Length: 252
Image 1 (cartoon, rainbow, N blue to C red):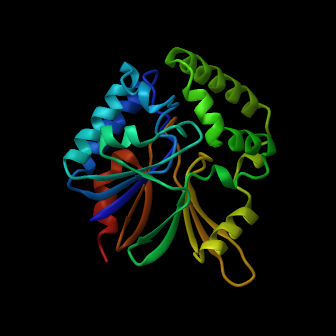
Image 2: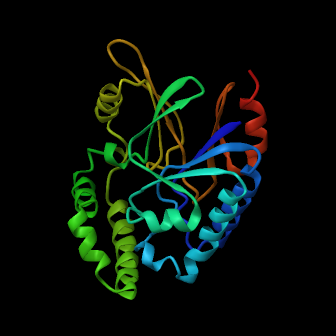
């Protein structure tokens, strides 16, 4: 069967329409898709697996559990908003947590998966922040705080991030082409699929020998980006078009 990729859903109860769309996608994917890969930022924020009992996370966790229980394999990669996802989340949902980057043989084409934020090397402020929040010692300090404290911190960080982003040039918030070339070279691959930048599309990365391929899965703020892969190729479309996309890519 086909395989599907989504990223940057940023699910929160403040956007119930996005949660409803995600639930619909999971329902449609069971029996149509063999494996769903979520390439980071499934949640708008995740403050630790011990907070999974909070009502705002319940609809998404239940939908994931129902889908995996129905036979859909789901793998989840950490994003820059839900980097505290851990084994408790996996146990609750039946999902598998993926390292970043992750190598996948996609219908005969070796492919590298990533959230994509580690490639935004021109944004030095963000890269410094990323190093901090991915530090296990920093994470342990945060997880030692109470759930209400962590919730307030997450909301403050969301506001600060939105303010900072508004002042940054668009160019530095995209991936750096040299970083993409180096990543693919280090893994000996020619294709990368990632999210994070909210700029969906198929991109060519030139090299002195041959071009590399970069596919970006878009976010779920204005639409519902979805990438479907099969033996007949790749299709980047809307989540509401899952069945049509599967039909197309399964044709040789």
